[in-house]
Image (spheres, rainbow, N blue to C red):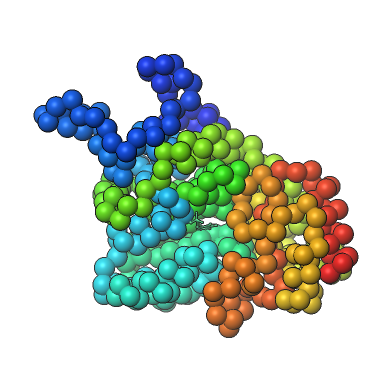
Length: 383
Ligand SMILES: *Cc1c(COP(=O)(O)O)cnc(C)c1O
């Protein structure tokens, strides 16, 4: 069955007792056992270990990514942390892409070292750099493509090959493109991380995360980390995310088309230094993006001339676009990474990673493209 059919139907079966078409919200901590001998006979004991509503979402996402199984979490960061806890131990080394979600950077930088794990940040878009950073004790390579917030693209298949050759697990964060546009397992990835907060929910309603794997052994280890650390998704969040995911393809297509229109407009604007959108023919990794993904997504970034002050003025003057962190929802959002999402990254590292003072990140929503463009044009006029 095709992606659109799966996104609507997978994981969802009408409730056998009432016929309710939607999976019920099983808002229950515990599940009654019929006898000691049939303990876990219906598959559930306590909601930290598993919950039927959460399971329905996990099954849907497994089908969409073409994986073997999924665990769902209270946030995208909880998902990433579960992978680290499950697969790393003191004395291990990991390679992390230098441009990743700010929270991923912060956890790798400030917490993995506490646990005795050695971290090397590299420009993963340079495949050679990943190979060079790999050592005997390297356990895991963590990539994100296109990366937040500069939209740098990593050659996922090439990094997977390096990982395979060295017996290293390749984990990638597929939040920005979702399985609708990018299918990491087909590119050789072992573990896929999601912040379901973003496009999977799509409505700015929930915080959630997921880890999809392509073998049972990884699932067991990661599910064990989740139950041990209590990083689980709640039934209400799973239910809302289930509904959001049913329209994923339609939203991705429309938001991506809007993003292309906005990127093309910005490219011609005199107050804009440059635009980064993998869909533009002049993006340095346009060909790679076209090869490894079937769409370019809803994230656009651009450098406004005049640095931090101009960036701030743009944020404060813009109409229609909401000044907010988060991304992937139906509402268009605008962010200034330097003063907001990436304020925790030291300036020299930030500049080296392309997160410059005037960088503006857009998450393009479902509004009319003409309205979005008119609002940007007006605000750039004031900046
Ligand atoms: C938001 C985000 C995360 C973290 O997810 P939360 O749900 O906010 O914890 C991780 N990776 C990417 C690419 C994100 O955009």
